[in-house]
Image 1 (cartoon, rainbow, N blue to C red):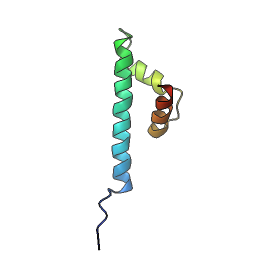
Image 2: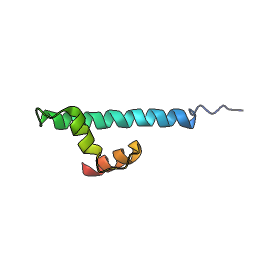
Image 3: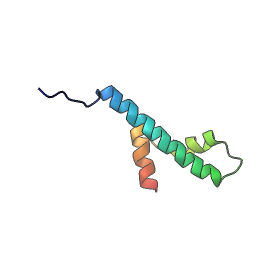
Image 4: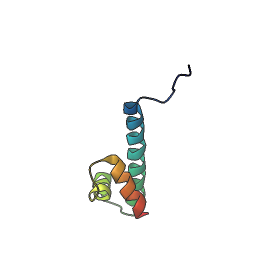
Length: 66
């Protein structure tokens, strides 16, 4: 019998959330370069302020904004 090498759902979710956080952080850094003096935390909050609290939904919303 072949063993399934797919990580458990919890592990996949954690990996996906970390990847999403990195994407949001990169977008915030890009905006920060054009907005000197604005704290990165403020920029990040503004990027995700109109999206639901779920990181996956935030990613999908930010992806539509590009």
